[in-house]
Length: 421
Image 1 (cartoon, rainbow, N blue to C red):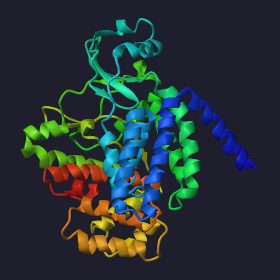
Image 2 (image 1 turned 90 degrees about the horizontal axis):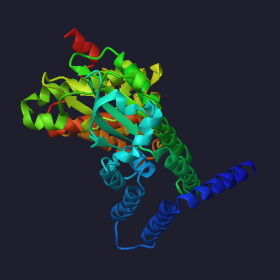
Image 3 (image 1 turned 180 degrees about the vertical axis):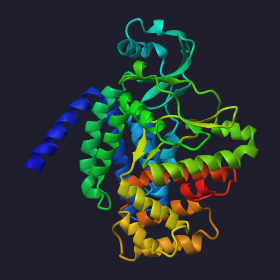
């Protein structure tokens, strides 16, 4: 009875959200019905393959998220990084929403600035560019100059995003409970709660400010830095940092391809250090989040999404990553996966699949392609992957994509060995 009352309560609150945002939610319900019908026709032995059906359903869901915007785009971005959960057709389709946010007119942001910095907020700046330099699903960034003369980046939370998130979260919870009996391979409710908790944290820019402060205190290698935070000007809805001069990493490398090996090698080494030594890493390695200055140094931007690992996770994942790459000596890689929290499937699955990657794939395939394929194999075999590892694999696969694009060889040498050399 308790569970029934809980679901009824969730349903009632979701119904309230449906009334206030009915257009977006009616589209969601209609799309859900379409997707169920698509798979129903597949079970009825249509002529299409399962891969084609996945692609059809994924396109419909992607269109829905793009049209509904806000939390829906954030959800799409979240699930586009879960190859353990979704088939590759969904991953490919949802990834098109990584840069889907449209700029918000500055007039709509003025009340946010006034509430955060005071009615006389304009007196704090000698210049303020009304055209944004970047827009995401939660916030928008503008370039400005303080009265002191310092150039800054002003990150402003979008005015309606908190209200829309409150509405959307109720609908997401309702949909997750409706889908739970249909999806036995995954705890849909748990994954949805993870998404909502992550988004709620990003909505409060004070969390990002704390992430930046903590990240800045770490002993990063030479050539890797983070922006300077203006703590006294930052709040729940506005965060101000020093402006970082330079070029986006991809733009810089297109002009200076001879610098690819040095820069990307340093970036990859930095992320290995973040994961295997610090236990805290920037979890959104978007190409636009890396700025290269004229001295060839990299500044990492955007700390809304941070991965945190316990000391035990750092130890297990370090052994696992270096075991996969052959730095751990004569070890049972399957046992390393099990110790790191990978469970499910046939008892021999972890060992067999890891040896498949080591023996059959790494010899003729890029290491990150092999890692991505391994994640897909785990999903097919219903192996449950620790949530903390999902963030790590996403980061390494993304950084690995840069290296592959510019044909830079991987250097998996552990950070402590690099220091010795």
